[in-house]
Image 1 (spheres, one colour):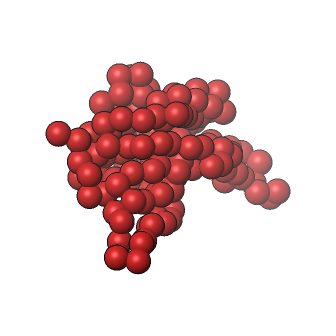
Image 2: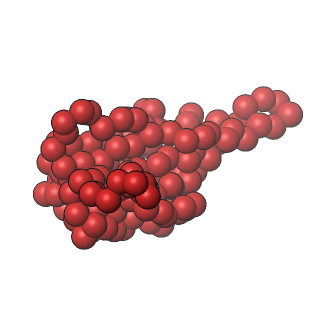
Amino acid sequence: MDILEAVYTYLSKNDKIRQVVGERIYPRLLPQECSLPAIVYQSVVANYDSALQGDTGYVRQTIQITSHGRTYKETRKLSRLVKKSFQDYRGDLSGLFIEAVFIKTDFEVSGNSSLKFDVDEFMAAIEFEIHFNEQKEEN
């Protein structure tokens, strides 16, 4: 299973997250005129471990998950749900065995500027480093 497919499946099956976003979990970009709150997930970077005999299959994949909301409080609440669902995770992630998950960064994204004082969307992003062997699937 692909790591991004596993992340999507895991997020979409989490009852607490679904109560907040429903079906609004998107890869890479938030659709125009999308209802909020919503989640966007994307790959940032993948590091592959190699040995003298070739690729080991071990991957350290950084995934960014951005929570979007209409209010700061709504966005923070959703971001904390995402954090809690992945923090220190180890085990079967929709058919892909995850060895470890570490939080790399946790930050708020400002869509505002010094010239625009109205805020109609808040964003908070968390980057998770997910360790797994892409050749090893949970049976």
